[in-house]
Each structure stands twice: as structure tokens, then as C-alpha cells.
Amino acid sequence: MYPREVLSDGGCVDLSDIQAVEDAPRGCTVYAPVPEPKDPTRDRYQPLATDHPTVRQWLPRMGTEAAQDVYRHRAATIECVNAQARNRGLLR
Image (cartoon, rainbow, N blue to C red; front, side, top):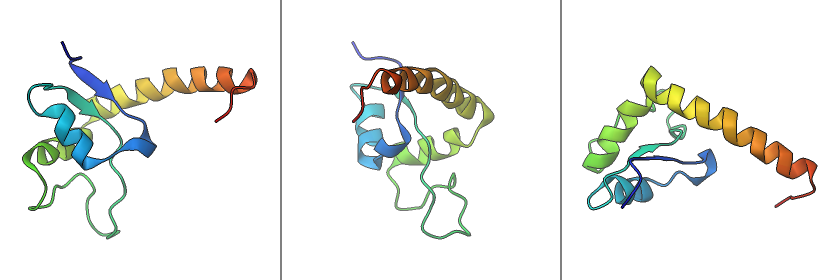
């Protein structure tokens, strides 16, 4: 059984991974920050015509307030854990 939702760290966003996690049989909803596009004039939440259908659903979803709230909650909880680990000398 797979989780219904997956929250990813910002440094780990890979479109092929999002596709693999959201597609069957997993069917998870991915919450991950959308990378800045190479073209600074392009809306990062607007999918490209060449994007996989799963990515075309993920991008606009991450632009919603609801998805950003979910991700903010993740940041608020995990950053505290990371800070505690660093304070105890656990570094990368």
C-alpha cells in the first residue's frame, strides 16, 4: 500500500520521479516546490506542451494556495528536526 501524499524536499525535485510516484500503481499526490524556469518571464506553474500529463497536473496544483499550505507545513515541521540534528552534531 502506498501513501496518499508525498512531500519532497526542494533539492530533490525531478519530473520523472513525480511522474513515477503519481502514476499507477502508486497514485500518490506529490507536493514539491516547483523549480524556477530557465526563462524568467515564464510562469513556473504553467506546464509546457511537452510535459508529461502527470507533470501538467502537478504544476498548476502547486501554484494553488492549498498546495502551498501543505508544503509550508512540511517546511515548518522538518526544519525543526533538521535544526535539532545539526545542534547534536549530525551533519551531512
